[in-house]
Image 1 (cartoon, rainbow, N blue to C red):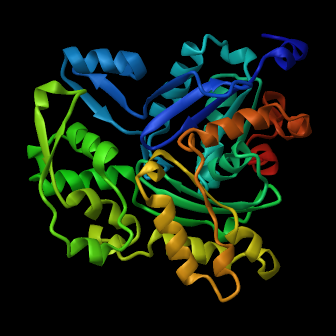
Image 2: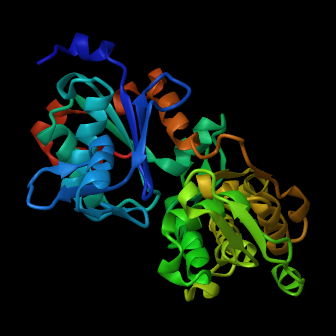
Length: 369
């Protein structure tokens, strides 16, 4: 086992396990070095779990049972997540016993989930120390800020996380169980369900879907059917698309269109700010940060800003500003990389020695940062 001096010299790795993708890399870099789907599979008749490149090869050559270990931002299978973490460490050419690990966690992560992650990392894999931190908070760090409201629209869930002076206002965090996957499913459904493969519907979303300025007005317009050549999957030929390209994303603002009795993302932003101290609300309205690949949808930032302005109290509406960095699908990982380099968090890491001595009590005392 490496000494404390050797461990101190090893750069931590940062792992962001989302519902759709896993991003991992050695801290200190501007971008992660590894990205893969958050999927684990088992080949028929084989006990070995397959992830990453091994999964891709098996999918192409055999009948495999594929399952996601993370659903709507919550870990549902810790055994599979352990395999993903081991794969990340291996692909980054690191030794578990020598490498500190920062794991990004969902803004609504439970104590039980955090304790299970600590058990995997410190007990099963034997890493020397770990740190966990909210993905929303780290996205803000990645943008160079300490205060703001982070709107994260991921693969299967949307979170709104208010942060004041680097601290998450836990009681004000909002959650909507809809994300990019659900928009893709709406597009797929508009094309007869399984008649359009999911990957094709996803390409339609990524290339032509957009958020309408005014949904009712847009719905009243004549919409000529158009064609999209799916270049990545030439066997799919010409793909026709129509008004589903703006109707599908509308579920983020009106979840009832997806059969959910829930508030839209703009209403969640308003509610999150309302639950924060009155004297800080104007500051939060002026710093609404977008993160997650789904926020790259055309016109999403502009529509969100308009809707929040309509809800904001008199005197605050003009202050509303939505910030949409170009690389916002990676900003949470970048924030984690930045955090690992801060000397001020050196004492925040939970060491294996502390965990071995006090178990879950040490987890509750020191995590998350």
